Amino acid sequence: MWYQTELRLRPRIRGFHLITRDIEQALEPLRQMHMGLLHVFIKHTSASLTINENADPTVRSDFEQVFDRLVPENAPYYEHTLEGSDDLPAHIKSSLLGPELTIPIRNGQLTLGTWQGIYLCEHRDQGGSRTLVLTLQGQTL
Image (cartoon, rainbow, N blue to C red; front, side, top):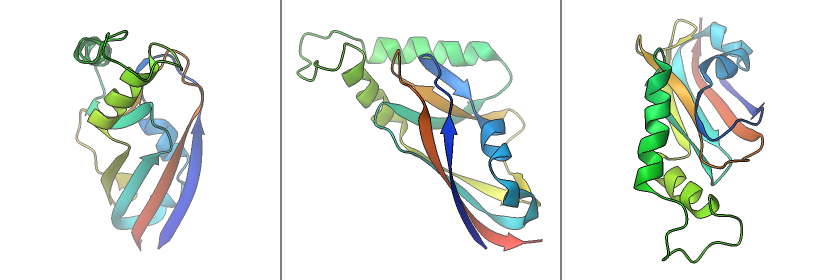
């Protein structure tokens, strides 16, 4: 079975946001999957995706602080500055984390670890809504 849909996420502030439930709710056929894969792709260059800690919110705020130190705004050597001081750093952060994830599926559920969740990594102050392409493939029950 193959299934594909787009999920438009509401705008979020800069930071790392858990979106696992948003994705699961957008995938009605997920519950019918015996075994397969979910591919998640974000259609933006200033936001990204990753999987990490889903319980303690301080992990997400620490991620934000680390990435802001790794890729600071207003560096004097940046040339791409017309779209705001957060734009080029957002592109760099997005490339560091990447635009896609692949997650195994077993018995109608995403096979994430106990403490794992899917993050939307919003790298702009006013990034707006974000669109994900969700593609399921696998065997049904």
